Amino acid sequence: MATTTYINGHVFTGEGFTDGFTIRDGFFAVPEEGCKLVDLKGACVLPGLIDSHTHLIPAGLYALGADLSGAVSLEEVFSRIESALASPMTAQPFACLFDETRLKENRFPALRELDDVTGTTPFYMTRIDLHSMMVNTAFMKKYGLEGTSPLIRGREYDLMVRCLGQEVPFGDKKRGLLEMEKKAFKAGVTALHTMEGVEDDFSNIDALLELQGQTPLGILLYPQVMDLKGVLERGLPRIGGCILIDGSLGSRTAALSAPYYDAPGETGRLYLDDEALFSFMRRVHEAGLQMSFHAIGDRAVRQLVRGYSLLGREAEKRHRIEHAILVQDEDLETIARLGLWLDFQPMFHEFWGKPGGLYEQRLGKERARQVNRIRTAAEKGIPFAFGSDCNVTPLDPLGGIAAAVSHPVPGERLSVEEAVRAFTLYAARIGHTENLQGSIFPGKKADFVVLSENIFSEEDIRKVTVRETYIAGECVYRAEDHQESV
Image 1 (cartoon, rainbow, N blue to C red):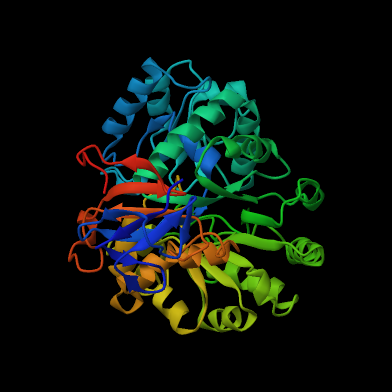
Image 2 (cartoon, helix red, strand yellow):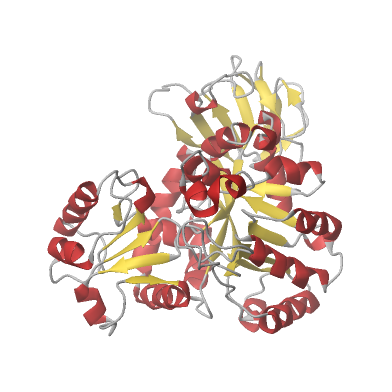
């Protein structure tokens, strides 16, 4: 590959700003005389965007089901389900991204209503938080669930997800991965971290290990299982992701220290007792692996912080806490002292953190102002990165950047530069890949994104789109309305 130098741009390297860069053999390089010149014509360039928390295989499969996102009424939900059932793309028909809080009825459908739409075809629909699902009568008969609630959540939900996952053919997983590859490149995502597996089921993990060499998309796998032996046998240096310490606020399974505002008798639950969790953490620690866990409620974060405290400061491991939506001040202090990393999803507060939204409904106004304390974490010196939790929220780093800059609590807002770093340099660091990714610097892989506008000066960041996406110096996406390469 010829050496190429890009000039006359507004280039954010991840560390600072410059006007150009050089690529040789798929890597950023030191400029040299006589190379090919490409005029950026003032275009804004970022390092390739990295989403540090996704669920790639499930998200790919969900792309083949009925998409209920954006529905505002049960009538619209039922219409989309009917359309999907007319030409199902998977052997087991389903719908995903259901969010009752956005419907005018503000509820799940009644079993009778769902049966009227789906008839005798076994059918399920997953809630947007991926912590509960509703099934119809035919599904209950198929899986021997008669006499139970059609709303499945908690431990029962995890078991059902595992059962359904084992039935998905490899071909569907491959098709789903190709769908996600398209979405990633369009969003400027050149690499991502994916949390795969459930319980002791390695089927998605093994599928991804086989498939990841078939895409230029950088994939960092986090096996979210508690089978340490199986992870070590596969030679993986990390374990975790969404190993669940608790559930979600939407399903009221997040573990809180005080009751839910809209359900005074409920505080959620911890999915693991201290003995099981701390023993597992100790074994992972002794094996030398990086580890990561899902914790949303403050009681879950507290339990996880207590477990990490038993291991002492291990900053070089970059152990992670995923989501950390509600965290008490004293736990933030301990997180900083232990050198733990937080992985935030800024689109969470964009979707559910606004006045009158889900967080306010579940937590009340006062506690709702304490969610996703990104700026507070930064000020305490806590390292962090950003992800989407795709398919919970879309694979859309630019949307995540906009959400971080316009946090509903002004004191928690980030600068544009800091928000961009959370999807580039910081996202590389949390996965130990900063020597290869995350910034425009000689010796690193030439992954970069050309934007439609200058994200650092545009007043409305939501207007900014991806014009082109490059991996190892090769263009993998070009917007349809942009006819010529930069």
